[in-house]
Image (cartoon, rainbow, N blue to C red; front, side, top):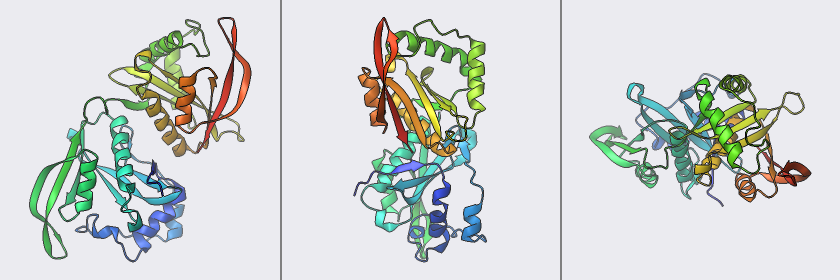
Length: 345
């Protein structure tokens, strides 16, 4: 069995599973380790009422949601969460809970927690994140150590579990080197000029973009309107990669007809100096998470068949070739075919 898991934004499909583990499971094995000094959660809602509640995705800071779900082969395993210790100083802590003890070994938690940390640093400008646990939860301390956290504080005999004193543990990590320097976020009006220049650079340094270098008639005003347009559409978005300046973008263009509103067409561009350094991968990870949030179930794009680097990137992110558009583009008096590629979510 693969230990590869995915982390997704809260989804109605798994609300009933969450209700079961929180309120119906009689054993509550996870509660013996996940903050056993706190009272267990309760609810007056029936499962039907709980499941039928409107689901609202709450964002704690920039692109960081308060919680995400851990999924393995379509099965709900648990949750990840984030909360402020002090929002005034950007002091955030995170946590993980896998409810089913059958998945407490095998690397499921490590995979999910590492993805959660990557997601947070890649979607925000936070300088550090940490956890709080207790000295009896050795498994959590080992997990935090595996992903790069170190013990920062130990408050002796601060927790009581089953009548016995345990130490309270604080562990944390700092944004390190270049690994977490990149931020993927939605474009804002303030990005208009940078984005305009980036698009012009990409079109002048790539052999396979739709428009020729200098062909696009753009301006800061037009770019601002484009950003506003995408930010006002529920099934479209414009994401940028920010590394002390914009170095990549990904546009998801949603359809408007009832029969194809579930799909979006993608356009991506990356600055020449950082191509091949994972920027495209981060943009695709972000747009896939966004698509799942807004109900997009099909992502599609076209790529020149001779663009081997592009084809490999898209296949790496799960896109499959559906067909070929013959003589789709004419570049420097030569015809080029394009692949139709798509990913179903």
